Amino acid sequence: MKTLTIIPSRLSATRLPGKPLLKLNGLSIISNVFKKAQEANIGEVIVATEDQEIVDDVIKNGGRALITSNNHKTGTDRIYEALQKLGIKDVDLIMNLQGDEPAINIDDIISLNEKMIRNQTKIGTLAAEIKSLKDLENENVVKVITKKDLNDDKFSEAETFLRNSVNKDNIYHHIGIYCYSTETLEKFVKLKQSKNEIKNRLEQLRALDNNIAINVAFAKSSPIGVDTEEDYLALKKIMEYKN
Image 1: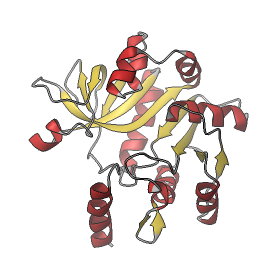
Image 2 (image 1 turned 120 degrees about the vertical axis):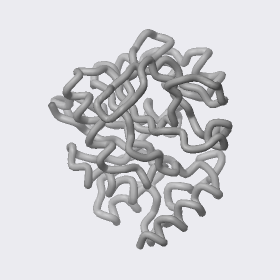
Image 3 (image 1 turned 45 degrees about the horizontal axis):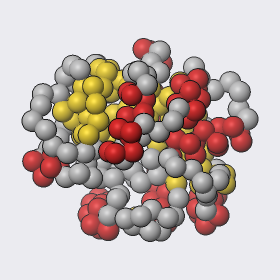
């Protein structure tokens, strides 16, 4: 089976404008993500963006990027437009890697891709253990409740995704990466945004509200996603210390 990784990215993030071009170890966040996706070596990697500056940055750092519309409500709509523009016909799986996850574990990307192929699943994603009460209560940390507990081998279905904290078994820290079968992606973007999705600001709820199952693989670690300046400074400190 053939996988294509598309990374949606834009400069106009509400909480941290200009985020993709902020530097970590001298390389922009978006180019850090691109390099991670390339190292996973599961297929071709493309960045889809509405901003020429992002295209220029990715190309300058040896990557591939293309311009998409600035009218998209979600990153998934953006990756679907990119897929259509690329006109690649023989792709089975689309890996949607968020442009603000530069610390994602390469092994976790590989593991998700392998589980999608092995289980012939429609949509797959990742989740890790919730490390602290602070994360459980933090609305920026998206949680997923799975039908069965997760371990390295399981690929359990998600029951729901939420931002608020609940005291429940099988609750994990959701990581912003999705893998779609090509036909599921096409079906998904044609569905109307659901009330649930709009209310919770979580587009994955659109799939569940339309009876499309999402399977969840267990991730080795929960990387710091960059949503706020605080996240950026924390990650910068960790990555520069490692170097």
